Image (cartoon, rainbow, N blue to C red; front, side):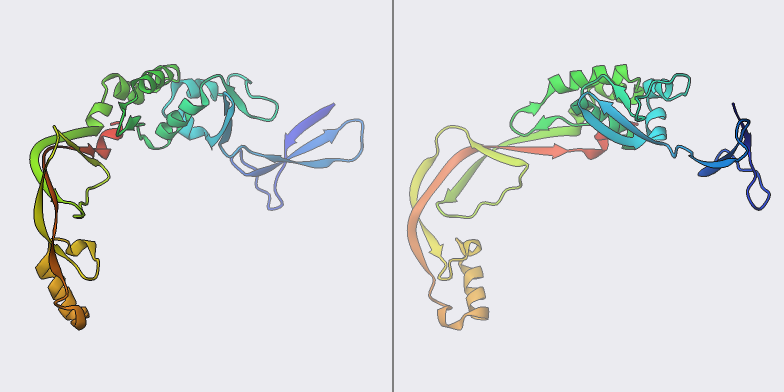
Length: 247
């Protein structure tokens, strides 16, 4: 029979429960010798197997925002696997968003510029938020706050361009014709250096040539080209990041 008693360090101080390493003095009744057995105290790291995926996190991260994990990790039950991993029967891909929320309070946004919001994903995540007992995420999804995280600004206007003219737009902006465009002939400035930004900008082209290329300063000329004019629908997608943080 082994009777454990708390030993003392070499300096005479008792080892406290928060020490990273403690030593248990075991008195062996059937052996004359004694042994010092090292014991490592858990530092709070948790490994979860959720469905077929594995997640590494911290105990406090889980219990502070989830009633489910507060109960699971309360210590009242011995429910971990042999290797210390906790198995959770849930969708691993959805849990990725659950864990990100528990870590930083950032809500997921399932949005595609072409398809819009993925409402099926929001509904599935709402059920997971209920299951894991996460009130803030649950409220954010139930009130559909994600609709305020993305705004779509639309405007209709007349636009005309010369073929070959550079048109720069941001990645969150799209333009579509409303009805067919009309075509006509026009004169356009041709840059001798082939610089796209100089198209239809004779003064800028000549100033650049005078500054950097004296020989071709007057080599540019106007050419006949095609011009189109149309009614355009401009759509801009605006992302409001603050709306993705649950308060």
